[in-house]
Image (cartoon, rainbow, N blue to C red; front, top):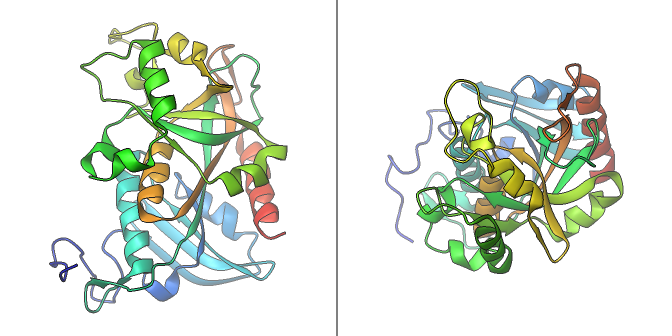
Length: 290
């Protein structure tokens, strides 16, 4: 691969990558990503020692140690576009020589776990439970900008979803990507497993109606009713499809687990959900250090 031009891989004066402001030595192989920058401190509060902090725009990070394991907590902000930035810059830190702007001969894999908040769409998946993303269902179009995307898709699930929902041709073509089977099995005892639908917005793309009418008022019910070989969609959020898809293309190990703070089917919502999020953070840290 030829040397990357400066506009393609921007390096700051201190040797850090452009957006997330980390240098290779600042990054641990175990990464926990969250959407909310304030949630980074909720993770690092558990660390016995913090060795590095960085902050730029919505990208805040702290690298430290929990039970002897080096971990980087990093905020992504909201959306698949932000996750596209984060995944590429994490991979650049791991698998590129930033001084020569060339890929390393030996590639390394990161373990990246997303801790999020989300809303369930199934009536039997209660508020304050944890949702474990066995697969990501992308309702955005990010992955189709990358050549090798067909090679990492669960084509059977993707086709079944498009067929059962009669997915409109004027919306982005859906895609389904599995998460890390090892990590999913590790966390299954503590969470409800299922497919996570990743939407390109919070309101209309997730079937929320305020003042603007929806093109398809039945979209949420179609997702609730989808079923294929024991797989069903359990929740909506806005990041996992990019994380799973880009992670698979790059060779990183990915998993999302969300605190389910609302239920779209029952109308329940936990307005005081900080405790359940903190419980989830503690669970993730304990589980990955066993």
